Image (cartoon, rainbow, N blue to C red; front, side, top):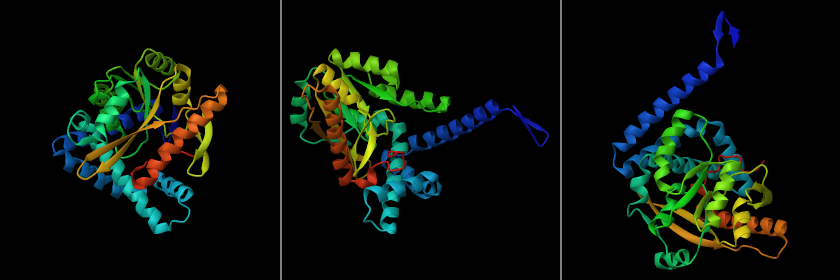
Length: 299
């Protein structure tokens, strides 16, 4: 506790009040978008974020990152890309309240579906990665549609009230479990893949203790976990690219990532991680306004 202006401020209480306010706003927005047709709910989320997010410090970070990746773009062009990103992020936020409906509907199509089905059906366990692009949550539709039972790893939200609600929205998409990132999660996920299960991983975030590989022309600390699991148990590694189409429709492309196996484990992990990040970068370059530029990818 500390005293200010004659009042005793209790930090824990102030944090709880802030969390409760955030949760109330979260529930209110959720009720609103659940009352609308899905396409209109998505558009509303995009509109609000496009208006409000440019006032945040994340907008400045996004502009800086876009400049790193696209140094030849003018300031107005970088601004347009950043605002398109916020439109995408707002749509994803609104659509997150309708995940079950979205993933199980015909709004999600898979390119070369029969070919993809044949490839995945022939595997006994694999790792499926994706990036924060389009709407990353719908990537799991590929796995569910073919009768697979994926496990997901996620980063816990600080607000415990919002965390609980978000988890309830996401859990049905991961029948094998949704586990919080950490050492226990790594062991659980590793065992799941070793036994023939499917693991879903977000692979585009900065991993401070990861390996440094090229990403948009600069070294970026990246998660080696997908490569390590693939190498340890001789499992294939895939990337699911999610492309946003009109009116909250999505197209998913599946790409197999080359897993390097020379016998030098450390070098193979780095090379395979570089292949994974290169696959993510290629797809982001196709739709740069749909990727989450505002997070701390380069440190």
